[in-house]
Length: 215
Image 1 (cartoon, one colour):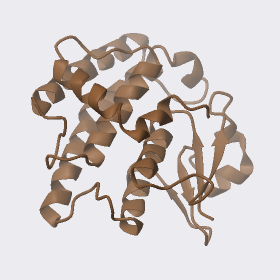
Image 2 (cartoon, rainbow, N blue to C red):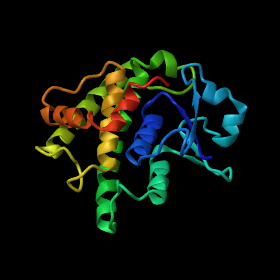
Image 3 (cartoon, one colour):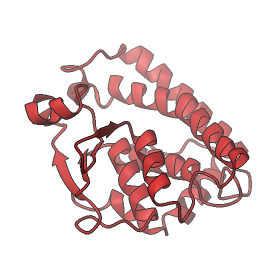
């Protein structure tokens, strides 16, 4: 059976949320192995590092032993196997639109947000095992990320969907990283009422339960 190698953190949870949206169930459609990233288990387990030399999570291990890494490609692989409900677009134009918004959010929000967290509140966990920027640079990156959250608030406007007028991977990505922020003490920046509504709306989706489930 396909195995999802998982852990705490937004990217493994993004894949698990995607699977929920696809109607896939742990134990029936895939098995899940959890790694303790706080202690660095994912980078110390020789068996896991052999599957993913970077030691990052998630990794999707297929029945034939092929190992797929990085949350976005894993989700696209699952989409190809389980095209309904569609989350990446049904036409070339739709797929390009969803990827545009997902890439823009990833570049403009996720990168500074995660780098800022690693340099600030997450510093004790990340500094021993990877390069992190200075606390001052981390604060600047966090502020930059908040400014881009406000930009996305404007893009959303009165809609609860960033692309195609329906729930897509781009919405899931935004929703996942908002929830990640909440788990580490972050709050939506002031002046983001559209995002607050967006989060409250999608908190009703079954995939939202991933953020409250025990690992």
